[in-house]
Image (cartoon, rainbow, N blue to C red; front, side, top):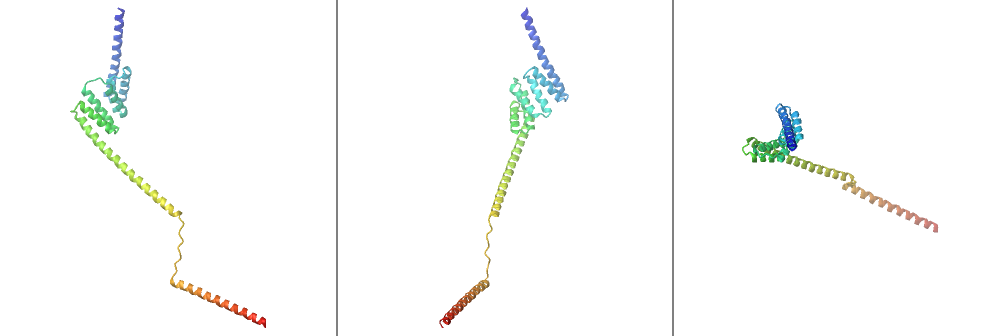
Length: 226
């Protein structure tokens, strides 16, 4: 009898605990559909504390994050839901992947968004919204890659120009450090001839002067002998 009461007590406690998390989840849903996304986030988080990995709260918390623009948090929440969900409902899983793709799209993580949308279409190939979003993500990825390449080319041109300017600067500095060569003065033929004539005249004068000196010396010697 005691065993019966113990089992009944445990069963009642378990049902009461389960009712608590569902009640919190409903409160969160009421807040969410009332546009109070921050309040809904609080309820969903509380429901997860009551039951860890409560798949409905995981999914709905991702929606609450998304509505508030917390896209990184939404990515983590949808990813947790997908990894831990035991649901075999393809429609629900397709929506989870779709929402995950939307969150990646908002963060400009286009490769990840494309993967999420493809997984969503595997679950529900007829979902036109997901198909459209996939095409959009592919287009944005191409634009991103093109822009990245343009920025890379622009940076390369800038680097090449900087190297060229630096080389030119170093070459100019080297030229300034060199001592200027002294230019030899230019001389005309007339100036050269005048210089030669002057030199010739000077030599003649020196010879004449020497000759006169020798004659005077000889004359003195003769006078002395007398």
